[in-house]
Amino acid sequence: MSRFLQIHPEDNVVVCLEEMKKDENIVLSNGLSITAIEDIPAGHKIAIKDLKEGDNIVKYGYPIGHATENISTGRWVHTHDIKTNLEGILSYKYEPDKEDIEKKKALMGTKNRIFKGFVRANGKVGIRNEVWIIPTVGCVNNIATALAKEANKYVTGSVDEVVAFTHNYGCSQTGDDQEHTRTILSDLINHPNAGGVLVLGLGCENSNIDVLKPYIGKVDESRVKFLVCQKSDDEMEEGLELLQEIIDVASKDEREDADCSKLIIGLKCGGSDGFSGITANPLVGRISDRIIEHGGTSILTEVPEMFGAETILMNRCKDEATFNATVDMINGFKEYFTKQGEPIYENPSPGNKAGGITTLEDKSLGCTQKSGDYPVMNVLEYGERTDVTGLNLLCAPGNDLCAATALASAGAQIVLFTTGRGTPFACPVPTMKIASNNTIADKKSNWIDFRAGQILEGKTFDELTDELFDKIIRTASGEKLKSEEAGFHDMAIWKRGVTL
Image 1: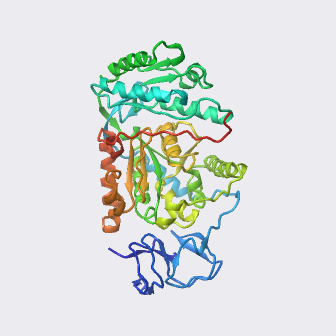
Image 2: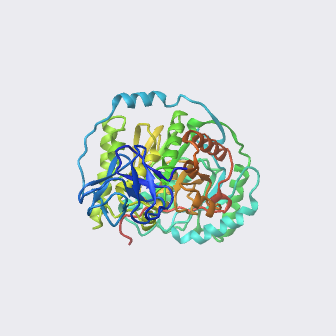
Image 3: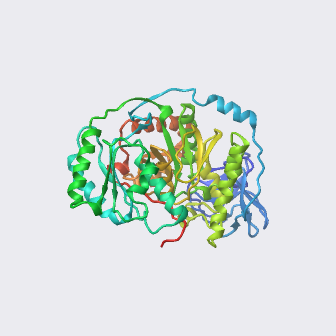
């Protein structure tokens, strides 16, 4: 295994694939020998030429910031000597490679593959057959949890389990916050991974069941049932009766052949490190491309982690209208920060920096690789469900739980979650953890589902793309992920406004 990686020929830094000690040497492909003038952690960057204060630091072939002081060849390049180039709200110009976009569009849906899923009456396909309890308000969270615990005793047939998705909202909200809560809840109630749903209300909340029903739309009354706790003499007894009725119906569902064009995958990263942009994220980008080639859909979110790499996505937009929607999403998110009096570029996190990521550009250029190479076909507002195949962009924050929940509400049946630091969480749909390095994969084998760090040991992207795609098909067909085996299920709604 090489001890370093120069990602792009124009880069003036390389990534150390293992820790380098002071006075150790590396030899570049052009024969130039570089001597480390200090200890440099694995995943971090080393300068391969002398840089002056103000010079751009180039990684992935793009500037990731500028030097804040003179940097000698062989020096550790990180937060102590780089500053972001990003500032303010920008103007953008649509500069697509139209020939490449049309070429890629012609390849969409040209491949076929089958998985075993639960085909719903509306034509959507679930990869799980769970019974969900969706509270309309946080006041009934404990009742929802207690009902799920009791109802799991009655699980039978093809039902996987009963899950309560608790949250803090549904009341004391105004404006967009209240609308977003209603939209997210209705999206989940209609999700194909749920064979049935108990909607659990309190009765006096702003987003009570009667208010929520128009958002939910028409439902199969044998699978979606409603309970208002304030109107019930015994909500536990009545809730369990309703759940048993739902389980009786859903338990008869069977997996059947479904085309991969029915798959929608969410793309998410968290706890990224210096390896994420060279192993796990580009691997997931290849998976996104493959899903799209099979007629399926991928959704990329985390808008703040597009900052600094957004023009790459913008120039892949299928047309100018999609480009304009992307510009609005990016600049709208920046305005959200400034209205709150917060700096736009307060990123990366401490864990990202410890792992070797220095600036937001550094992080974003790695993060956006999850989107692959296919055109951007659609831009979604927060809480909007996709009905467009191919690559979608979704407006949501970088926060892992909020963003992953948004991906599920947009229609994703599975989320591919890349990480260099590790995390145990799961969202409302199966959440596959893909490790960027083998150290975290070995240490947290109870969290990690796939080892993208094998690329650092000599496996090719083609080999691992085949392996990961096969695992996704098995997962879609019923194979459990680590977080599912642990019984983890999380959801979080993005709050932007006041609480009454």
